[in-house]
Image (cartoon, rainbow, N blue to C red):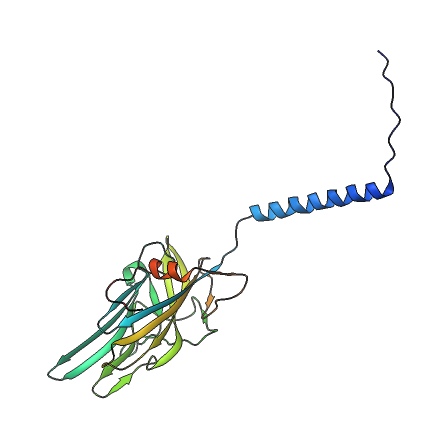
Length: 225
């Protein structure tokens, strides 16, 4: 059977331009979808908080909300025949590989970092450190009556080292009921990548809801809002 050849349909210039535009848009959309399919880049996960550390209190800090305590913040006070003393501690635990930035001096004081400080593997870390120590009539340490200072933190997630920070206010008054206030914390999701203390904004920052941060922190002991 002999086929009848049809005459080709001539497309107007305006229609051809529209078709070209649709083709470009579809192509761009395809590239965008491919980009979304690529592995996600690392992020800083930041959690706002308002956790009061009371005299004699204890707080378990879970930086990445996996249900595992990464650091413990502990306040201890007591009196003996030699006088009264008080201290605020932070513990990560050598067995778990979690450490606090600071130096092993007389009382192993943790650094009270300012904002915009780099926290990475080049810094000294300890498994157990004090914020301050009170004995007799005075306080000692870099955390005496400070606001918005940062703990540099190094901890383990599934066998890999990650860096983070915790922001606190500290009151060195052993007679006060409220000793410290945790106002936020963060960690870097890429293993061995440095984090900047206090960084809470930018395209590489994910902010969790404050409510989730408090629940995810796994607080124990006494707390007060």
